Image 1 (spheres, rainbow, N blue to C red):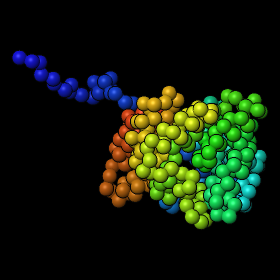
Image 2: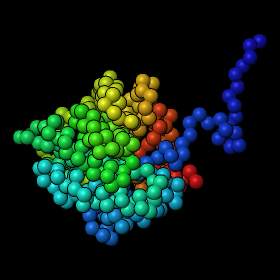
Image 3: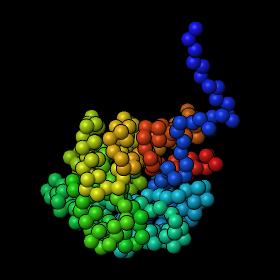
Image 4: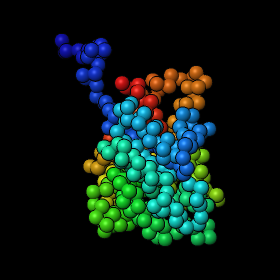
Length: 320
């Protein structure tokens, strides 16, 4: 008589030893929004529990995050200095630069990843230089490189270009290497889809496009082969890690990249995904803790090495 397979009964004592997928504090990055001024903490109506902080209060928030087990975060600048050139994006007086320096002073081992994009610094809200109503890819590259270099000089560990301009990874890598910042990494938003899930972020960062949309430079949600093409090109150009954004509707893309690439894969659990769970939880429709932990483990199971999530701080507390 053939042996019949019987599934192992996973008692609480056994479960953690045989779990196929786990995550730790080193798998999670919390996004932080940084603004000018002092003693400022601004609520974001579409993202309950997430705030914009001036640098002094950001340090207190990061202290709380570190106590919960946090090991790193992603900084997004929110600026009222907007024009058609994006010059404040690379100003040494920007709140992001001040935040980098302050964080490294208080938490030297904290991993700082900085968003490099022009949308929050442009009066039209697009991610690059606009001529007429078209994005000038090549004229945008030098500005992105300047922004990345200023962040590196302030002490950033990793630069994360999210603009989706062609060849920006190589432009940034060359600029960093020229100034002897070879050890500053690049996390490329290699696979960034033109998605409806970004709405709350654009509210948070005051970065909604003033005309048209971003479909000419962000990816079509219908395309998967293009994702591998984009990611491979960015790795060839010098990216140390590549990102899939958003992540929940694109777990197949994470899995595909994991099979094809050897660099770390990052999944961005974006604002719309966060806000949907928050809204459902506030209405009593879902168990927030349970659904967040299930969501995060699904992203890790698909193949992501690191997850950027607005739920990171809460998840770390729950894991403890």
